[in-house]
Length: 171
Image (cartoon, rainbow, N blue to C red; front, side, top):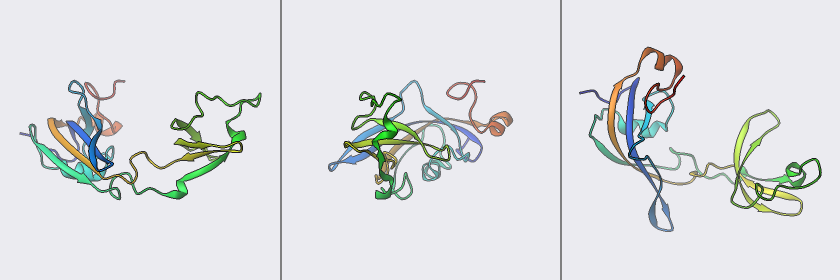
């Protein structure tokens, strides 16, 4: 019987619930035919998520909460920014209204080439107001996780930093 530990390939089914107006609602979950597969301790998941699975084995189910501070962080009002409307215009001065609309997530890049995703909050004649907070920022994460498989990671998986084969990466 293998236990969840560093450098083990772990397969889990999970459900994530968050509070929406006083009620816990499902925000994400694995599908029955496709568990989440990761290398424990490789930094792929939230550290608090991995900590709660440490020492568990196949068939164990655990329910736990992760605070916003230990999850995706607290919301930061400085991450809501106004970007000049000209940055969204094509060479003819037009804006793609199918992409640039309130609620859409847009890929953006800063002047150093780093990529971000932001949610369009508002559009004015002069600017697009975008929120670059993680969508789960400020939320307590309520997980229920069942371990479905545990095995030792191969040398190649550890070198590459990801799982190979079923549920993992294929080269």
